[in-house]
Length: 354
Ligand SMILES: Nc1ncnc2c1ncn2[C@@H]1O[C@H](COP(=O)(O)OP(=O)(O)OP(=O)(O)O)[C@@H](O)[C@H]1O
Ligand SMILES: [Mg+2]
Image (cartoon, rainbow, N blue to C red; front, side, top):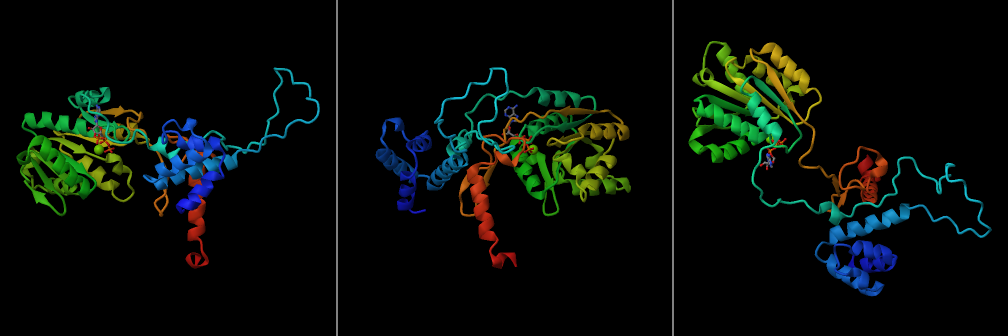
């Protein structure tokens, strides 16, 4: 929208809406009259026009969705119902539709970024996982971003100190490359190697990073009698993103890798939250020579926020709240609804429907 259109739209809004829009944007906005407030808002919008327009449309959408106020009583008020009697609803309420205020884009974005540095204190579950690894295999099932890498690194350090080889597997070449860089920084380049379909570097290092398929093939070769020296000294196999066990196509690779994994090596399975980690731990216990311990929690250290990015670059919260509600379409943000509808209109032209 052009600046003139925006100005016109702002002028059509009640001042209460303009004040809500000005919150967090215009210092002491409550002191300004309508005309001055519009000037200040327009000035502010120059720095983030898309976000500003998105918040404005959200507020307008919310206002339009609000049920009309009940007409004033012209005749004598009816006697009030006794306090204990259930009151009739004051307006028709669509099932699941919430009339709570929707979060503004500015508030939804607030707090995202790099947190201030703090001393590192391992979480209880991280210490627990490391301790349990002393007596058996470990299955970790915790939400994304919880700090599974810390467990992998500490466990690898301990195994390397005991002169054991460590293999870290990931499902993706890209993730293997990232971990190679990350672990080279932590352990020193000479102690980290990588084996993927595309890359073979420092393959005699004590800490080897590979895709799960490569490890499965190494274990196949070992099973066929071609024992690889690294497998002789293998002390720890870390399988990151092990929820791939459930993948209909690739899951079999994880399964075979676990079955062929030498008994002297500890297995550390790291996964994002999965529904049945007990089953996996029970299965491991049934096929391996040591018990498998389960470390599980579902608390998100990094809360999720959901947004919608329209192809034209407009960003809006997806729901009315900052966090993700457990789902009813009624909780969708009015601006997200508006952008969806616009997207549908734009993409369902007779030509694109053909
Ligand atoms: N105990 C802790 N206290 C604070 N921050 C931590 C802690 N443990 C790990 N972190 C930090 O949390 C972030 C996420 O960690 P990490 O990448 O290991 O998560 P993850 O569980 O492997 O997530 P994903 O499922 O995405 O692979 C990192 O920046 C890491 O430094
Ligand atoms: Mg991870």
